[in-house]
Length: 173
Image 1 (cartoon, rainbow, N blue to C red):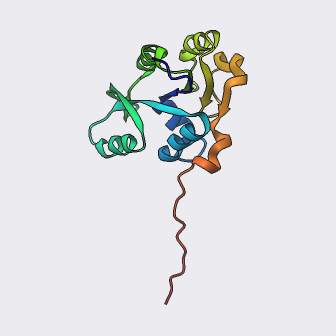
Image 2 (image 1 turned 135 degrees about the vertical axis):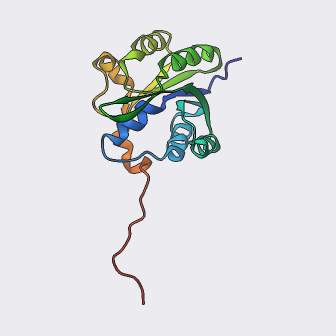
Image 3 (image 1 turned 180 degrees about the vertical axis):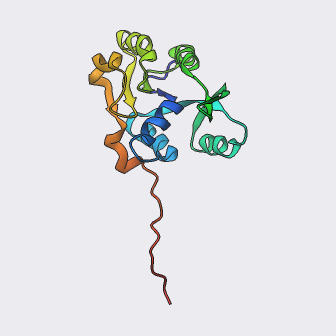
């Protein structure tokens, strides 16, 4: 049964994380979850993420912050001598957005990936799209026609950035 006021967020974690890092800062996922709840009345936030052994504490923390984690197995390979871990979550994000379709009023898609064009277009046509949150200015040109929904996360940096402790060169005697 649909809750008339329930909005759900569907987050492409790698696109979000890498997009924000490409702009020189790190997202505080706890603050982001609170932002989604307070600003857009998001009751369920699905975070699509590649499963990497050794990241269990990260996954536990994300769940404590209120995310529902949807894992994708990852592929590991070497490229130019560098270890690459790839966990493409596009199909899972689209699938879960549609599985949950009857349960939410509006959806927020968090990604700048043009692979989501058909999903965003469908949600728009059905009046189920609330926002499209893009991680940087280099989001896909396929999404530009949805400008009225787009929120650039860079504009929220002061609210959502992890604040690093400043270390002073002087200590008290």
